[in-house]
Length: 82
Image (cartoon, rainbow, N blue to C red; front, side, top):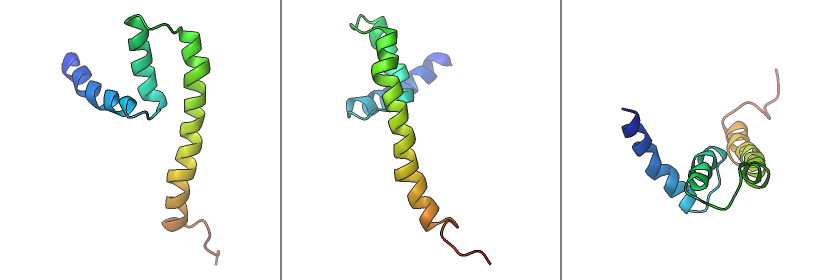
């Protein structure tokens, strides 16, 4: 059911955010929920002050910390072409 799915994603996303980690998808869930519960932040503040920097950080971090090590160790990036 939809309620079961919402409950299933609630705890992992909440734990991720509670650890202080920022992920754009997690923030798109938790911050609007906080806004609906009365947090003193607007949607425009959320987008400008949180969503844009976090998304850029996720892109750079994903490229440098995930793609680069795997690409260099398992890929064919620095191999000579024959």
